[in-house]
Amino acid sequence: MAVYDFYFTRLTYESGDWDVDQRMPSNVLNSLVEYTTLRVDPAERVIALSDPKMLEAPFCYLAGHKLVQFTPAERRNFERYVKGGGFVFVDDCNHDIDGLFAKSFEAEMARIFGARALKKIPNDHRLYSSFFHFDGPPNTAVELNGWGDDLVHEYLRAIEVNGRIGVLYSNKDYGCEWDYDFRNKRWLAVDNTRFAVNIIQYALGA
Image 1 (cartoon, rainbow, N blue to C red):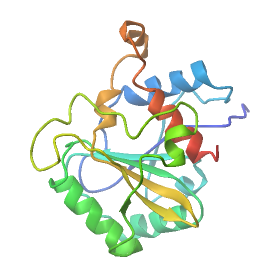
Image 2 (cartoon, rainbow, N blue to C red):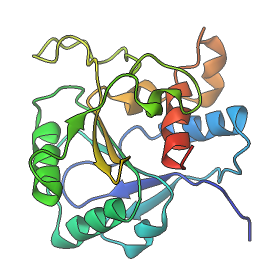
Image 3 (tube, rainbow, N blue to C red):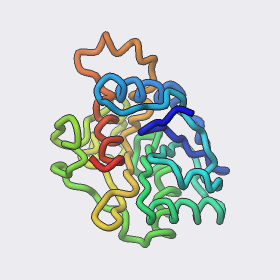
Image 4 (cartoon, helix red, strand yellow):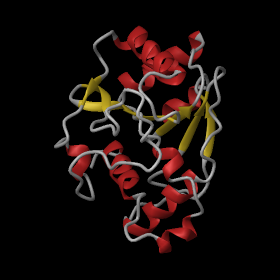
């Protein structure tokens, strides 16, 4: 059986729409192969948040547009995973700060971790230099909706556990930005998936 340093886990949940940005994982995995020495499983793994198997994942991705309302089993696994040292990258596909996904997901985080747990992270956080160097979160082409989100989101938010990010939360819709066939990256002046490499390297302890 092959031994991998990393595999990409997408979390399903019973509410909302988790099955988004379908080409994004293969694009990100290609970047890990291209830029790092990680032994990468080329196949995306889709695991229910309620399944105890998700507790073994090195990294989890959760996204959607609609309602996030965890079942008791989902809530229990999410808390156990994060408090046990796991890393969840959560991306609001609405790229806003006041839509249904944002409101309902943030309410779930407050319920699990407390009302003040989700905080802005500074733009000099180690996340932004874990592999490539960024001066803060890269902007995306899809976030300029002008609905009270400061035109562009100048920050990401996170829940930290013992000094490390356990939940990284984005309203910038990176999933949509990276949702294209990885072979088309050759047409980009700068590969926009490089920030995904940073996120994963940070999640792995870089």
